[in-house]
Structures are given as structure tokens and as C-alpha cells.
Length: 133
Image 1: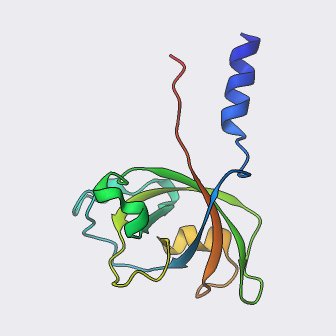
Image 2: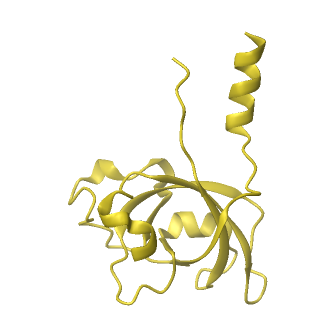
Image 3: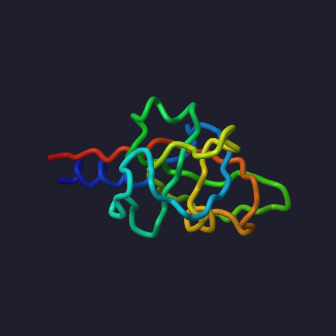
């Protein structure tokens, strides 16, 4: 039982120390349709913490549903908040060329940036939920 508690604690408090570096910008509605789930409104996670990703992260559509832990590292005029958030991939970047690694919903972007139109340098790591059962 003690080992289970240690394992659960470890996986819920994963350090971002080994994350990749990318960029993030905000994008606004309309968010539908997406390439992952079309016009399904139920595809969006609670709090609307979702992203569209660039070609490098898209992985020919395999990125759909992936979850990332993401935090702001820097940007012009010190936009970063200190929070680490979890976002879910729901779409391929609808802009060409894509302006950043992650196009974040307004809600997700506001969770890590004080400035709504900033271009952020971010650290991210794929977040995988491991079931112990």
C-alpha cells in the first residue's frame, strides 16, 4: 500500500525538468469543426484547456487526445504566470504557416499568460495517465 501511495504521488507531481521547448500563442473561436472530432462539442476538456498543434506535434493525427503539461518560460514584456496546466490536443493548427507549436484556447492561454496577445516560450511534456489496475 505504501508503494502505491509513493507511485501515485510521483506520477501526480512529475517535474517539468525534462520537457521540450516550444512556442505558444492564443486563438479564439470558432473552435469547431476540428480535425480530431469534427463538430462534437463534447470533445473539449473541462475548463476549455485545449490546444491545436503544429505539424511537428501533429504526428499525422495521432496527436488527437494527447495531453500535455505546459508552462510559460518567457516572452516579451514578462507575460508568464507561474502555473503549470494540462491541455488536450483537439485540432491541427488551422493557420498556415502555424505561428507556434501550440495554438491555445483563450482559456488555456489565460491560465499561463498575463497578456492575451503574447507569443510565449513554453516548456511541455506529454502527460500520460498510467492505470495501476
